[in-house]
Amino acid sequence: MAQIETTRAVVEANETYDGKIIPTEQAEIDRPVRVRDGSTVQGSIYGETVEIHSDAVVEGSVMGSGSVEVTDSRVTGEIGTPGRVFAETARVEGTITGKRIRLTDCVVRGNVVGMNVILENCVVLGITTADRELTIENSLCYTVRSSGDTILEDTTLILPQAIVNGTLDLETPVTVAGLGHIQVDQDGDNRSEDDNPPLPTMTKDDRYEREGTTYLTLAPRVLNLEQVTDRLDELENAIVATVDDTSGDEGATMSVEDVLSLLEADVGTPGPLE
Image 1: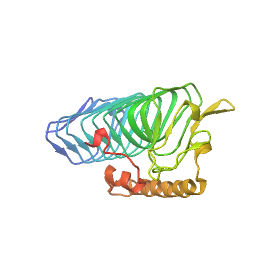
Image 2: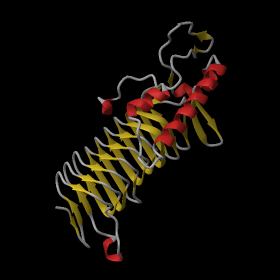
Image 3: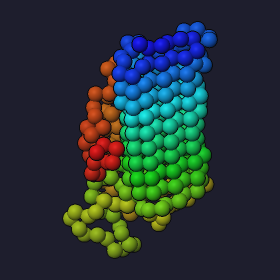
Image 4: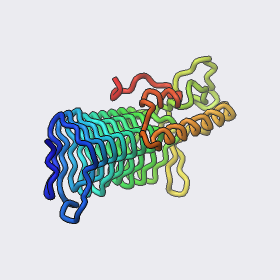
């Protein structure tokens, strides 16, 4: 049976708790909240520290004044804290915000917004933004924007652009999956005439500096601007539909696979979805 007390809140393993776990008086604001293995909370959660354990489901948002940890579980709303977010093998249907964010083997339907952000083997169907440091390894994002030091390794973007206001370290080329197999200028005037060219990639040669901002973009190498413009309009409409899907009273109804299909992202099954 759930123990919802002034100083702590615990939902026991394999239990279903019908309701929100939020403070109703001043003394409850700083209590820790734990949702144990296999349990379900049918409502949002607020605590000082919030821990969501394996195979648990939170049907709502999770907010922590200190930190949020999510392990091998699902949150149907947003995750937010002014402190640290740590998530591993988790699915989150909304945006994640925090000061320090580390996600491993996660799928996020919204944006990821933090000061220091690390993504490892993740799928983020929104914008990944970091104010100080951003590291992305073996992950798929809609696009990224960083105001600090940025490292991209084995990264795939839906949009053909990333924006960085600090240093940009490209460990490997960035693959662009949202434009399909478009033809791009490969080496100056050496243009590919392949009817089915490989997915385009962005390298250090696609970096452009302007007023202190680094743009990583395919734009100067695109051979058919009209085709790309039409495709970007389609992507924008798909993103609007994706956002609308998470805005209803019932929460998200499309699976992540459905969203990738709607975006027509030319990728195999990302690791976290296998």
